[in-house]
Image (tube, rainbow, N blue to C red):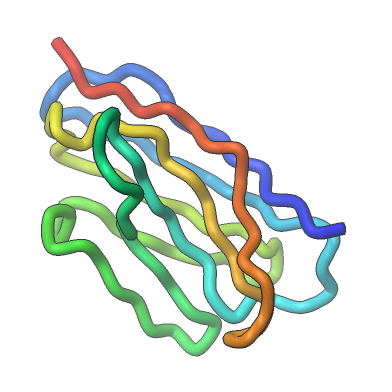
Amino acid sequence: QVQLVESGGGLVQPGGSLRLSCAVSGSSLSPYAMGWYRQAPGKQRELVARATNGGSTNYADSVKGRFTISRDNAKNTVYLQMNSLKPEDTAVYSCHAKLQPWSTDYWGQGTLVTVSS
């Protein structure tokens, strides 16, 4: 059974940094795609960043230049380094994985990131 376990959320002041981690267990494959989505109160869930096992990445325009996604394929773990955080980055961040392009979506339980002074 595939499981995604996240860590690293919390409270940070504007301008600060946080690093989120997500480990995928229960799969012998390195997932085709791993990434992060977020959902703020009253808003739709949106893609934050995504990385494929081929090395391609894509980011939401709102986080480009501030957030960096990376993968450790040997550990089936994806990271999101978030710098220069803004109050509007406050949301529940959820890890996402697809083992193959055509396969089921897997989700983590979500971790709350709060950016506030």
